[in-house]
Length: 409
Image 1 (tube, one colour):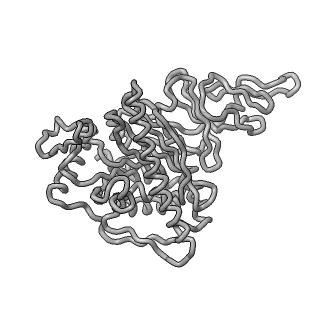
Image 2 (cartoon, rainbow, N blue to C red):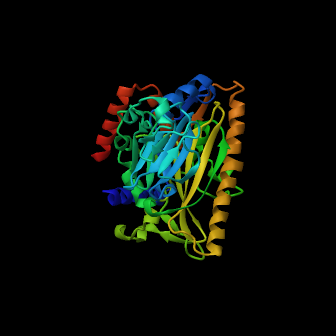
Image 3 (cartoon, rainbow, N blue to C red):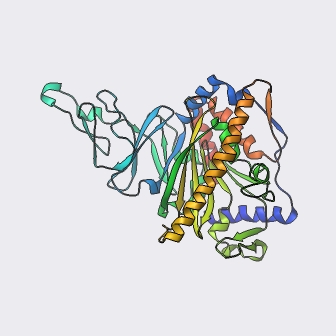
């Protein structure tokens, strides 16, 4: 099923490339500027989307061993991820059930967590192990004071969590079968090479860029080049989208001369996974995955975007993951150079432009921005934001069950 779908998408891209065509949206769409600048809408988006929908919180290779943990804050919610003895991942509210003090910070490996305020101790499976000075504190049911557990799901080498312990939305349904396609990367066996966090503009301004090839040869003329492609076809799986340029060619990047491969001359069964997963894969509402090569080694940058504290702020953690861990100085240097190059592209071109754009929009001198027929990904993204911001908790289950059923057809 996964292989068949990937081949089907690739052949569609090749056919459009041969014909020098692309798929278009039905019309040019107007999005209100207030969608980017309204502080009240921004707070509602954080509540209805980021605190209610499944979020990709870590690549699996960030927590490879039992006992590994990661503490992070998402829109004011403290989250603790832990790898259990049986290899599964659990997600908890990072708050001691005594007074709410966070019990962990950063990353590390631990079988238990000691609250630094009063000394209550928790197992890494969330159980309350011990109360400090129990003879003085008084009788307490420890089973009723375990860490609050969030829904958690691991698939395709990625970890999702929902920041609502009462959520009834099944994470697998939410993904609409998209994780099966993402499994083609094989991320569960990859290595986390490096990571960093960058400040950015309004989260939707930032995310628009991940769904847009139209800007590539203009904004990135000094990095990617002015002759870089600017067309993309879009494949949607619920709110999640893959975008890739319509072309019959692929580049054999591991060759010395970046040799072009004519895909019309290659049989389906001979198409490599590197070809089948080309392009950018986005996971609603905040993830972008793009493949790269550093020193001839296959890698990917997973960009994890979250809203900041104000409407014009966001932050993005960039994970550079590699299929094989570099094993000599030359390969390590090349991988760092690739990752550093991508920082320049995003920080100094995409996000710098996004911040200037947002400041201009806040002037109130424009009522709408435009998404052309060639910018279908942005149109679909904003449609889903509006739909899910206004959906009730009960609506969510029905929305994604229907999407999952359609994806299975």
